[in-house]
Image 1 (cartoon, helix red, strand yellow):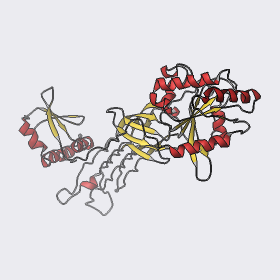
Image 2 (tube, rainbow, N blue to C red):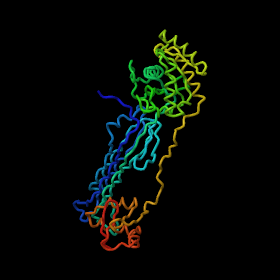
Image 3 (tube, rainbow, N blue to C red):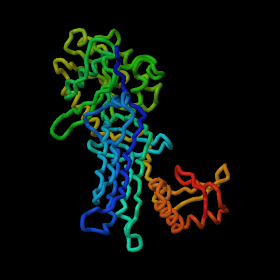
Image 4 (spheres, one colour):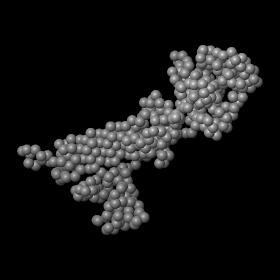
Length: 425
C-alpha cells in the first residue's frame, strides 16, 4: 500500500540545452566558380525555468522525477541555414517555493506569485558557421565553432506555505471538513486519524472585499515537536501563518486537555508559535453532546480570558460568526514576515575578458576566465585553422603575454577549461 507523504524539500538536477555546432560549407552552384563559405550557425540551447503554478501546493512530483533537461539547438547547415533553437523547459512549482543552488547555498529566487518565472540554467550559445568568419583577409575560412554546453545545476527547493490562517488541532478535530465548507478546496475526509497527510490550501471569500488563504495542517499529537505522528514536518509551516484557528473536537472526552496538549507542542517546537493569535473553536455543534460540551469548555476557559466559538461544518451553525472573527483579526494583524531574511543571489558583473593564471600541482598552468573557457569549449580542436584562431585570441587578450610573464616554457601544460594544451610558442 502506497502512502501519500507531504514533500516540502527536494533536490533536483537541471540541465539547459547545448548549442548546435556551426556548419562548414561552401557554395557549389553551377556558373559560380568562386563560391564562398555559406555554413550556417547552430541554434542556441533551450533555457530551464521554474514557473509558479497556483494549482500546486506540494513538491510531490519531484519525489518521482528529479532530472530535467531542455532541448539542445540543432546544428547549422549549408546555404546559410541556421539550426533551430532548442525549446525552453518550464518546470511548474507551487507558490512559496524558495530556490537555492546546492553547490554554494545561495538563494536564487523566492517564487510567490502565480505565473512568476525564474531562469535557473542558461542554454549554450550556438556555434557560428564558417560564413560568419569570412573577411577581406580570410575569404574562405574552413572552420566553424562548436556549440557551447548548457548550464547544469543542482537545486534545492523548499516549499513555504503561503497561508494567512492555519487550522490546527488533534486528528479528527474537523479541520478538513471546515476547509471544504468555507472554500473550494476538496481535501480527503474520513473518520480515522491522519486523514490529512499533506496540508490543503483554500481561498476563503468573506465578502466582495475580504478574502484570505487558509490551510488545514495535518493533525498534531503529543510529541509532534520531536517528530511523532505527522506533526514535525508541518510545524515549520505553521510559523508562516498570521493567525491560528484551534479546532477542538466537540465529541472529545476532554477538549480543554486537547487544547493544552497541542499548545504545549507548539511552544515546545517554537516559543513564537504559542504567542500567535488563536481563535478557539469547538466543532460538531450539530450534535447534542457537543452543544452541552460547549458550555463546559467556555466555563473552564473563562478564567483564562479565552473566547470559545461553536460551529458545525456540516449544518453551517456558527460559520459566519467564525469568518467574521477571522477577518476582523486579520485586519488588525501585520503582514506576515519570513522567519529568516532571504538574500537573493545576483552575480556581480565582471569584465567578460578578465582572466586569472595559477600554477597547478603538476607544474603546469591553469587559465581561468568565463569567456576564454567558453571560447576553448567552442573551438574545433581537430581543425588547424580553428586552432590558429584560438592562438590569435590568446595573443589579442594578453593571455599569451601573461603566461610568459608567469614563466611558462616550451612543453609546459596549460589548462583552459576541460582542455590540456602543450605550450609550443
